[in-house]
Image (cartoon, rainbow, N blue to C red; front, side, top):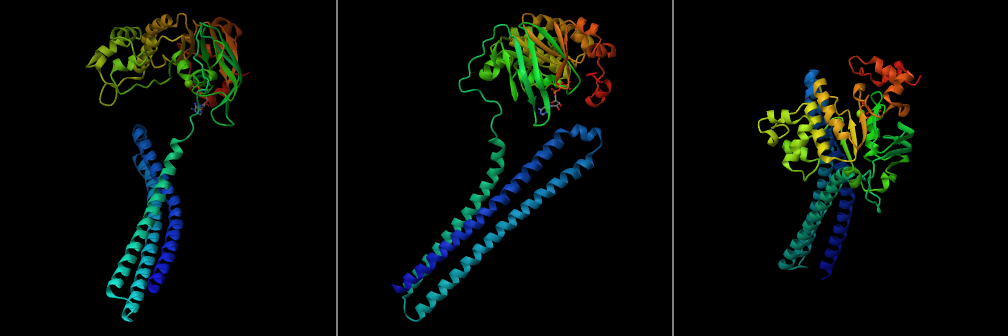
Length: 439
Ligand SMILES: Nc1ncnc2c1ncn2[C@@H]1O[C@H](COP(=O)(O)OP(=O)(O)OP(=O)(O)O)[C@@H](O)[C@H]1O
Ligand SMILES: [Mg+2]
């Protein structure tokens, strides 16, 4: 019995040390696993980026460049993988050696006692096999530690992406937006996408119910941002935005977005049928209503030209639509939605003049009794609106009707006279400073 107690004590101490050391080592595996997982997702991201930009790679004949660019990231992944595997391999060797030493020790010890006659063969066999069993269990446990911390590292990399807090959340006591006329008011709004780069500073703008205004300004001056803020896709850092007197931060985003129809600068379509894509504007619309909206948006003609008409699937293996055709689908959606506020971000920018003329008619019909904000570079599409706002560097520099602004001979008049055949030359921001709108 004395022999067995001694054996049990040695075994107990060994197992405790073994498990603690394995645990400590396995914990370090977390970092390796996390870095490896991060390298893996970096590589997948780079590959997706290269593949989606295959057109650029072709246009600039950059196949070899893309290849060596990806090679760099792949090498990084391989390096991280190697580090991780080496680290785990070292731990496994430690476990293996520790187990071997103990096993040999126990067997040698038992052999000595047995040969001195202190033990029967049966006892020896039992002691040896029990020790082996315990060692095996301890090794199994430490392997689990290693796996566990490997997963912890992997998860750490992924969870960081998923668990980022939602930027815009409804207030706990969010009310339903009650739309009466659709007046929009920006009150002393400061906004920046990234700290230190303000888009708006102390912006004040009041749009009366059913008023139709046009936004003009150089590329990057904040026109789309103003629409994004009205939809509460982003929130101002300072100030508030009211719709019919209600702060949009206090109403539910559902009700806010139900009240606004937006045609974005570059509308996206679902990989679904044309019918489903248009009906997205109002899910309970009948087929006839969808077709009516498509007709008003001048989409009906080209839809009938596709193989399956309204049942044609949009996307890679279905019909591929041009930019202008996608805009007309988006317009049909907005017509179906029939919301009180209409935001058009260059909604007719991809259209030829004749199609645009047709659509302007449908648009003016759609705009009736609605509050409308139109962003356009082609000033001729704005001249019939109630009011035109000129943006520069995130501030309003002119505000008035087309006639008033022309008479003022300011920025708008300058832009208007610069237009050749109704187009504003596409001046990028750096060049814009040479025109110096603010002067
Ligand atoms: N999602 C975003 N994240 C960070 N910065 C952004 C984002 N969208 C726009 N910006 C920046 O905000 C500024 C205003 O952009 P905005 O899209 O409002 O310009 P715009 O007047 O609509 O230009 P355009 O006429 O080219 O459409 C730009 O400097 C742009 O770089
Ligand atoms: Mg824009």
